[in-house]
Length: 493
Image (cartoon, rainbow, N blue to C red; front, side):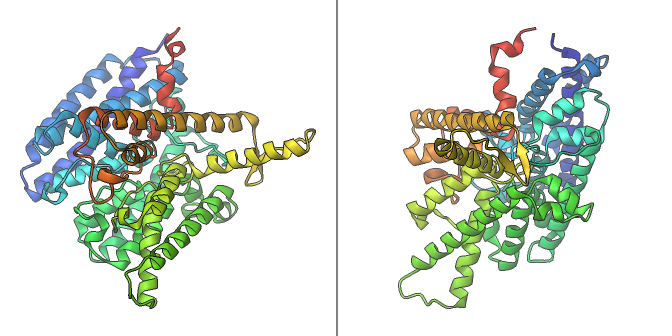
């Protein structure tokens, strides 16, 4: 039977840890005195009360008897319920007036999607802006990963929850060998270092300290929430755009590789990683195509000088990197760039970044595995007796993992189609429905049409926002964790 006490204890622990993060936002609200401190204090009290109650009910749980069912259930319930509790400062403070909108904004934050219903971000108080950024920072590495790193008290259930939340770290990669608590601490260490470096570099540019910290939080998490209505375009700074391009790319790299590079000073693992090489080639090709497209369609009579070429390279590369990394930051409204670029955007949205990174999407590693398997299928047509293996970075990918990637691809596409159908039923146009569905499940943020980079999701019906919230959570937890709970056999003893 399900270990209910373990589930309650874990949920209570997550809520208590989240109370600390909410109180941190309360300190920011107190410092700036914008009037948003009372909503944070009320929300923190509610969050603490719920967490303490759950923890007390499950305090005698047998942690070592927890299995995969408990792990998947805890992770899914954590993300779903924290989005309800995390929306309280928005709703209680009156900054977002409806529950569907507040839940959508919060789920978009935790899942690092970056889609927003807010129409005037700069009118929000500092505490609320910081809370939005903090949501994405937690969601980037994972709420459970942070909790396991801070409180390694979960016994046998820790590894089950860790596996249910982390995004495909084993796709063609060498796994960490030590205990899961040590893994969580190492991943968190890399995350902290990158956050500090990004914030410092942005502060050295035209950003003030508050904006630099917020964008450091949302860049390392490839989330995309900004403190400005025009996102990165607000500063009109080549320096900031190049810093963002660099660290959006870093955020798209498997965090295991970053650990070996930053803390172990071992760059050879990055240099020999096939997924990263494939992802890098994809980015370079897409950026080159976009640059040429922008140059070919520049304003009539515009000179083709170095300033024009540099601007096209920077603007094109930024948009490609923002979409591929699932960051969703904006320097341009790409809708006037035409249908050709829209198609490129959809392809980049679908593929996403590397497995085991904070980015979303199908993942470059899975794309490489499926592509190689497809090549083997064609080769078998000509050589039926040949024994062909799929290899990544010199390692043979087991047939089970190949089949899992194929199943993932099928479910991924099916959810996109079902989501698009549901959104179209609620009034979205074809391009809006398809782009919003891909954007949500890939945790990108901007879409096409009325949900393009220069607009938001405010005008969508409430039912569409609930659908997109489900797709965002399902995509962030990599489908199987959430969808397994919908199987009747999951609930059988």
